[in-house]
Structure formats: C-alpha cells, structure tokens
Length: 286
View 1 (cartoon, helix red, strand yellow):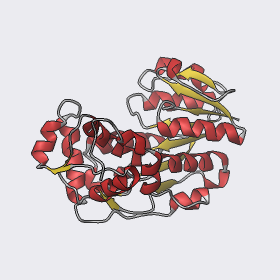
View 2 (tube, helix red, strand yellow):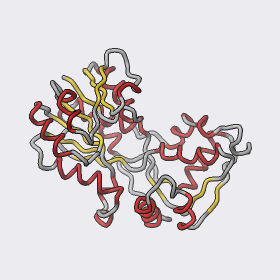
View 3 (cartoon, one colour):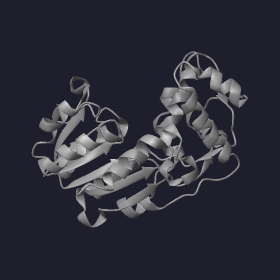
View 4 (cartoon, rainbow, N blue to C red):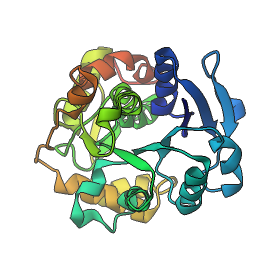
C-alpha cells in the first residue's frame, strides 16, 4: 500500500509522513518544491503542484490512498487522474469553518467547501477531517514580538478551539490505516475553547515572559495586515472573531475517538514552542 501525502512541507503533512513510515506504510511525499523536503529514510519525494495537472500522473501512479490538501483550482482534474490511477481512499484536510452555513461566501470557507463538494461526487471513498483553529496560528504573534512590538488584537475575548497539529496528524494516521473509520467527516478540536487572551496567558506561563498586547479597532488591525492579507480575507477573519467574541467554541471528542488519546492542550503546544517567542528584542521577563 502506498500513500501520497500532499502538503508535505507543512507541519501536519511532515508529521504524518513520519507516523505512516513508523507504521510500515510506503509513503510518497509530495510538494510543489520537493527538493526542499526533509523526509525519513525510505520515503520517496515527488513534485505535485495541485494547481498544475501535469504533475498529477506520475505522483498518483500505483498510489492506493491520498492525504489531500484543500486546493480547489484543479480538483476535478486531480480526482479524474486519481480515479484512473486506481486510488481507493482520499483523506481531505478541510476546515471546521465549512460547518457554518452563514459563512459559505467567506474566502476562508470557499476553497475547503469546493473541494469537499468535488469529493462528494467522486467514486473514490472519502474521509474528511475538519479541524478548528491550528494551535500554530499563534506563531504569527511571534513576528511582532521579535520586532520588539506588541500583539494587536481586535477581539481579545474571541474564542477559538486551538488544536495541536500532531493531533490532526494522529487522526489522519488513524483514518488512513483503519478501514472501519473511513467514509465520513470528523470535526476535530482541541480539548478546550480558549480566548485569544487565554492563549497569550498560556504563552506567558510557558515562556516566563510578559507579552504586551494592544486592544485595537477592527479597522486598525485590518490596515496593519494589509501587506499580506487581502481585504476579503481580513474581513472574513474579523467577522469570525466578532461572531465568537465572548462565546465559547463547541468542543468535540473526535481526536480521542480516532486516536485513543485525549487532544493535547494549548499549554502543551505553548511549552513545546516557547523558544519561538523568546527573542533578544522580544517581551520583558515577568
């Protein structure tokens, strides 16, 4: 059995590759830039650009299952090629954002929803993982701290359900290797709903530092990120945060159901990544 893992440069994909290899599965690591991959011994690499159908055929040859990143640009061509190659099972890394009908027009939701819909009409058996907010999203705050600044938060009381990337990879391993878990969707969350302020408090405990925070207006935040976020994407994030301001996010036990272990806490993630927030020009010791 050979599993193709797309998005292999990402934290989830790279972790899953090691887990599959340890499980004894033959793994093919795919990336648009395979020369930049660092893979375990015995894992082959292949170029796959999910926006370029010319890269699909060789990558899918003799593949039984695929861990798929949600890129909609050429999803029809990808699935057509996967069917002709004899792929039996696809596990999609989607997003829990698709579960909110009111957000269907959001650019955050659109790409995931388009791929889910395409998979819904394919003959290939499909399993969909719908994680909430990645715990690693907090790493974006380290950029401000490394420059000696503060974290700008328009909604410090907005709740998310931060999930450790290892838990997503563990869940993917389970559905890829246990046939009884296939063919459905799983909403994955961390074990607790936390506000942004609560996440920063956890980072302060992990680092022993005082992390400065500015409570800014939504317009000020949107302007501050305009160099790297489109207005539509920024508006979608602001809308999501506003809707969850003061409202805890629903939590599921699906990580435990799939993996047999409880979901890792954000405190665990913070402890593992504390050094990313400790910089010479960063926040002052508490």
